[in-house]
Length: 310
Image 1 (cartoon, rainbow, N blue to C red):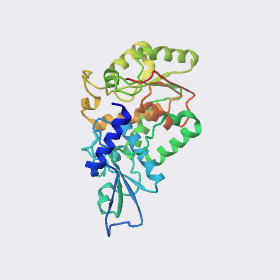
Image 2: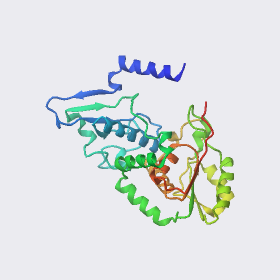
Image 3: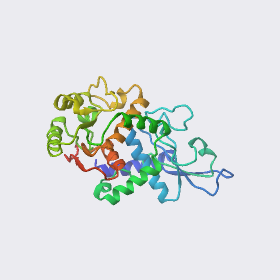
Image 4: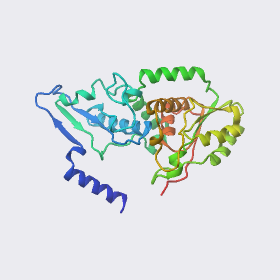
């Protein structure tokens, strides 16, 4: 069955049998803010990582802006792996500030709310064309600055880690392993092995002898150990959390115990990766977000293009 035909069947099923799961309006006579229209952003994927969620939310915010709607993120602990902290309205607000002044918990009181569908027509924020020019990359950067402002806790943690590290002459390296390497998810970009990455890193260091640090972002302890063995003390990281006891059978979200702390650590790693002077890595959401956060200021970028898993 072709992917396009399958998607058509999913949409037809949603339209006929599952009104609550498809994009639909809920209008409340006498509700609050009758002059405004809101867009309730949701995402039901317990295995989605932090930047996979950010990709979905930012795409939905762009969609809302195009339609003149006010976006409100209404993620729940039941839908995604992250957990609310005290005084937060949504797990999104653990890591980011609200995308608008309105709260998800109040949406049921509003006059006009468009509910985001399970099989939403919202565009993805991360698209290949973003990286075609500095102008498009900067446009993506402006969207991120508007809708994905770091929470105060995330910002404070980032400032402390930035003070600890000196990444002015650092090469950033982003390598995924674990479930990406073991499960080879269909239609996802093939990730480079550490053996493929090492010659590219060595070539960069040869051409840029002033580089004093390799800032590594990976969840795979095996990748860290191999690069540490090859490059020694040049390798540095934020934190020391790796996916423990991965057996190659499931998604890494199932192996994380303290999801919020893991999320904070990954968030800081990507923002610090964006502060390096160069980037070498695999084509995944984390590397894409680092390039957008960097806003085109990398002196050198090498993203592997190895095709897609079948």
